[in-house]
Amino acid sequence: MANSLSNPTPQFGTAEYAGKPGGDHCQFCQQPIAGNYYRVNGAIACSACVSISRNELARDTHAAFWRSLLYGIGAAIAGMILYATFEIMTGIIIGYVSLAVGWMVGKAMMKGSNGVGGRRYQLAAALLTYAAVSLAAVPVLIHYSREHQRPTQSQQQNLEAEQHQLESESGQTPRPRPRQRINSGPVLGRLVLFGLASPFIEVVGNPFGGLIGLLILFIGIRIAVRMTAGHPAEVFGPFDASVQPSH
Image 1 (cartoon, rainbow, N blue to C red):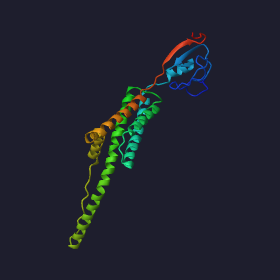
Image 2 (tube, rainbow, N blue to C red):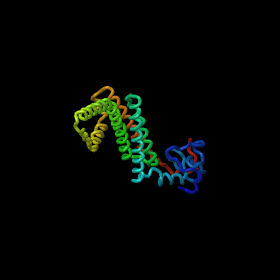
Image 3 (cartoon, one colour):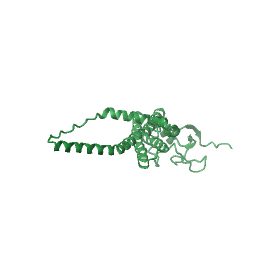
């Protein structure tokens, strides 16, 4: 970062067009321009700011990508919780939450990469958005399954208590019931597969509503993809500041 700049780091993606066009001040650092000037995304820039844009802005590194991916995973988990919580609390299946999830993922990834985007960021954003929305079906399924099993478990406990009492009255020693051990690995795997396929399963069960849900999910993915495309600085120049543009 140039020490001569008293203002914060120039934001080349969001230039502030201060002053009148063709003025003698850099529209990023607000310093007077002497000699040559440049155009960065249409805004007048001094040589120092152009040097920053070329050397430090939108530098795609492995560290930037993995940091972006980590932020995106966090946003995807938060989006999945938001989607599932809304459906559980309201009982309403609304696909418009997919739009919010796509925005959350795209915003988080760009925050993690400091504005770096590109193909691999877009691919990761699309996969994370789809995974967040589709896997939201898993906690919803678990919630409703537990709600449905509560009466059944109560009846089973009553039957076991009655059998235990009959064995005690007949003089038999009550035998402890062996507990069934459930291997959670295959169960978790099936739940994940069910979640990933849930948008298409919904189409089979409810063609009209399922297709609308898929369309909204696609739009949410598109939002994340467009946000992570990146906006590299376009630099033109140098131009001679002493030459006035002809009208």
